[in-house]
Length: 506
Image (cartoon, rainbow, N blue to C red; front, side, top):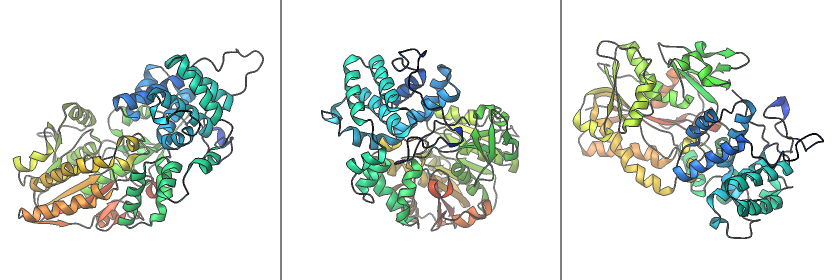
């Protein structure tokens, strides 16, 4: 994988992250023979980073979808692509911290600044405080970007603010602007998370059997770039097929998932199995969710499987490939046609059998239980959620989501799980999964679904999900959360996936 520009940890030296030659070379001061406007021209890497930030702000876009497209369109690769990636993602991760310190050097209410100006200031702050860019270059190039994209007036403001912010290490700024360490307010500024997310994560750690003192490590893990994990689809490829070590590509064995390999260097499209659809880019935690459902014992037949919220298709691909091997049939339901098309693309390499091992259907998962009661042997509910367990990959979610989203998503999550239970035959198994450790999206949803099933006269029991996980991964400390499984980025190197298995009894 192409390395991102070297970055330093908070309080580290300006040279931090230089060992081993990681990241683009440190920019040098202008020398004789170097064009005098070196730092007044706007390079494409910074333009791309700015475009990503604006798309996230104005269009509710996801950086992990916008950035690769822009890099391809503008033909950026190597260190330029790495620089653009670090700058865009660094700003999205560090926004809360940078806003706190920038607000102290702006001579007007910070929240009244134009959103484009805010993004440019954050870009300058990230270069000054977390990248190996000399202060004079960080200021000059950011001012040039402001002048080109926003005009002369905003450029003057950016110049004044960044000159005031330059010359100090991040830790020095944090001592000035951050509330006391260890408090929710302190964690919010120091780790750049909204306060409600800090509180929710502490509560989740405690409720899922972890020491709340792990909070700092968990929040820090959210700010570390996630490894690019690949999933070998069963019967179509193996993790060994994905391994490589050459000049353009480095792929190593996965850490926790038996179907995983980790891309350390290079473009996933360079891996033949990925290019041919026999393997996919997918977090190891997401892979384990599908594997836990596949490893659970069902009573009686095991022929009809259902993925109730299948888009964009990662887990459906693992289930479909396994269905083809086991002689089962997977129905993949997705409410939106464009996401259903993503599912079809994800399943393109799965061989067609008699009647086909998979059907992709556009429909509302909340209605499947009523339309097809007792029809399925295995059901996956990968419920829509806040995505707070994947902030490493989608850092913008921390600023986009609010506590109100928990209330808005809760009824949908409960309705989908109720539908899954109704669609399940007695003896069948359902897996409820979310990419969030937050109690309102995990344990409380399952508790309410069980109570609702009892009121409807439907028998459902909890299974020992950690025991089933042990069949897939014999030793994964810290994953058990009562009778459910909760993965953590700081402990397992995965997204914070939650999965609970239930069996219908009557």
